[in-house]
Length: 123
Image (tube, rainbow, N blue to C red; front, side):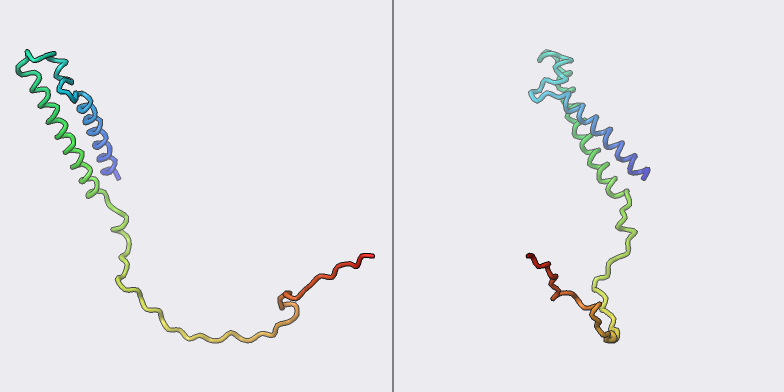
């Protein structure tokens, strides 16, 4: 169980980092790079920052995929400890049946299907 908890904490930490990297990017090419350079006068700053954020996004997403696959493989399942189900069902055993002894039905044991209560006569 300790391995599972460690992997879940690692996955959550990498997810938070990935969210921060994605939010620092601007879909129009500005983003964090425009904060450092401001315009096209910078020769290296804008392009390097965009490349870093792009590579960080792909790297972090790959790490998340690897951790999820690792968690799936490493965590033991309860199905492995269960007994296997046989491919063919077992045949039922033939047992001798003995008839039940006949009993005499007494009026106390008989159902009251024909019972009709008598109502008092009104005057």
